[in-house]
Length: 69
Image 1 (cartoon, helix red, strand yellow):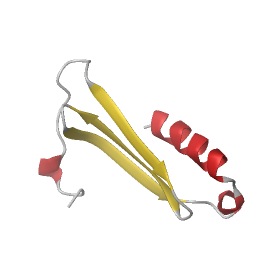
Image 2 (cartoon, helix red, strand yellow):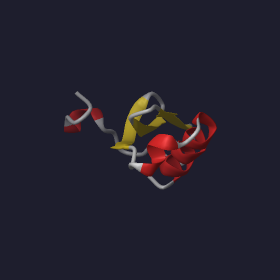
Image 3 (cartoon, one colour):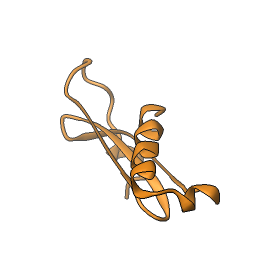
Image 4 (cartoon, helix red, strand yellow):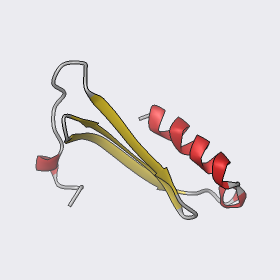
């Protein structure tokens, strides 16, 4: 489970970060990883008005969401 504390790792330096993010018709999600270890993750449901967004708008929205982590 992602909600278990042992999965989360501490930062090791300031290099080798990878951000994964995705948008769907139901929500946004993002994961920040370093050397294949999960550092931080977050997700949320779309707001009512966001459910009408075009795909490219949702994809841009999830990038902004991920950068705010």
